[in-house]
Length: 197
Image 1 (spheres, rainbow, N blue to C red):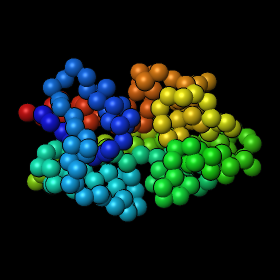
Image 2 (cartoon, one colour):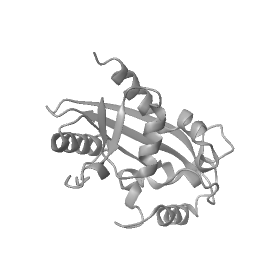
Image 3 (cartoon, helix red, strand yellow):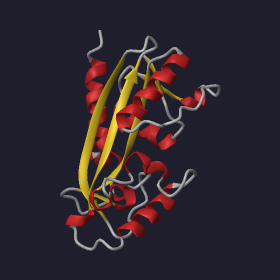
Image 4 (cartoon, rainbow, N blue to C red):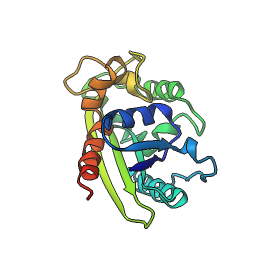
């Protein structure tokens, strides 16, 4: 089965492909469909954004599509950056700028309890006739006071998963996949896809 990943993010695509290695799924990214219109992520939830992307991409390509929307929710910031995680420091912000803004906003918060956060991922699987299934995963943790590690992407260098003394960015791909919000949502998607007749 060929499935379109509704992303041009190479690292995100690699992460998703790793989880299905050895199975009869061929994943392609939006880079293979240059004419695909950009989907505006204007939903109020991770699920709404993921569903909108998956349906639009599946309809355009005529293939099953997987889209995810994910982000970081920080207790001390009232759940921010949330659905705005990718553009927390501005519309065209990069990972480094977003992390810097987060650390700046967290500076007044000194106790660990106040630095609690969770990563959330909602994955949507759509087929061209409009049918849709969604799968959610999350992981709790805390926000560090400085970036550590060079693996991963996004807020990985400042996120310590619960019970770990390493950030996501200090972990191997396999360690992160076993714990991450996306890994947990992908496991649910995996079980679903493996049971499709």
